[in-house]
Amino acid sequence: DIPKYIKVPLVRKYTIIRYITAFLSTTYLKLVDYHDSLGPEDKALFLTKDLAVGNEILNAMADGIINITHQFYLKLFHTKVMAGTMILDQMDVVIIDEVQDLNALAADILDKYPTNQKILVGDNSQRLYGFTGAINMFDRYKNEGIMLNLTTSFRVNVEDARVIEHFMRREVDPTINFSGFDKPYPDKPTFAYLTRTNASLIGKMISYNKCKTPYKLSSKAKVNDMFRLPKCLIYLKPGGKQLDDNLQYLQTAADKYAATPSDLQQFKSLYAYLKYKFEDNTSLMQSMDLVLKFGSNDILEAYTNAKLHMKTKCNLSLMTSFTSKGLTFDEVELDPDCDKALAKALAIPVHLRDESERSEILIGHVSWTRHLHKLTGSNIFDKLKQQQKDK
Image (cartoon, rainbow, N blue to C red; front, side):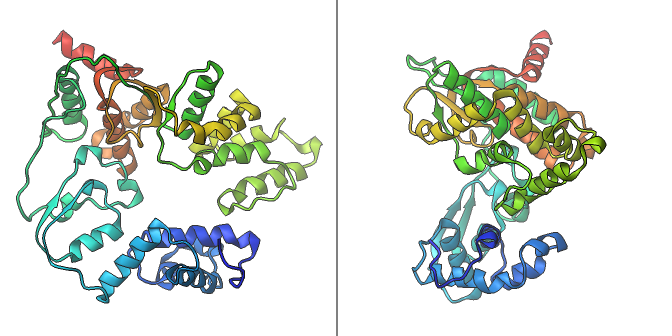
């Protein structure tokens, strides 16, 4: 809905909007300051000349010419508060949730808010986004106020909670206390299937579609984002046009592959070449395996039907571990990719894990604490549970 008076080249539109969106989630108050902070690779994509167009788009949103997005009005609020042009009313109490993973912009607002008391609620054991730069407000306010520990989970039974507590004390924090809650099994139970990656999520969607199993797609992720890589691979061909700058590297690789004389070509197919060239790109490898396993028709059909499944009413929900946070089901089954990702992180000694690997342990914790009665599909959890029984 960008108005025609703002001249945005078609090939630049996606890139400009992508960087504007990224800017809206930062603590920078001006687009130019955000641009100055970017590294050489980003500046090669988001050019200095793009700033004028970017500011025109932002101003059009501020003037109501373009529909206001959630990111924009939060940024406008942040900018005015930090600049002192919006004076916030004094509050008796301000309460904020999920403070273990607060974006920097929200952290700024919380710091600035005039109040007699701040109540911060969250769970350090569910800190999943530290590797993205999210702020842990428990750390920021560590030496202020009173800390109250709520140790009982109403999402997992007592027996399994003991297993989880033992695991978390060994892998994350030896002082963690985590107890469960037993509840009678209901007459109408709820079920969930959790995956670690979008590729596995799409694969399960296809499997459910084939066997006519009704399910609800409980995902906060936009369908287009979920299917972006698989769809790109399906339509990828030498000489094609790629409007998504994030995926231009694939088009460049496809063109280079086609330009190599057949007698010098050591790869039998474009996919074989991509697997060799981008072997460290986990998301790409998973998406290629998905396309090779199911084919384009099944994937495109799953894409077409995805939005319908978001509105389906049934007792089986399908989602990733990330989007399961905050939800509770009677029974949960984990996809094999959950164990695979967790095992990889556990192979690194505790003291050598980086932020991404620590987050992976906590993602495992989240996926293990969504069930009230039964958890299946995790060999790692089953082994820990058996060890507890053997003691």
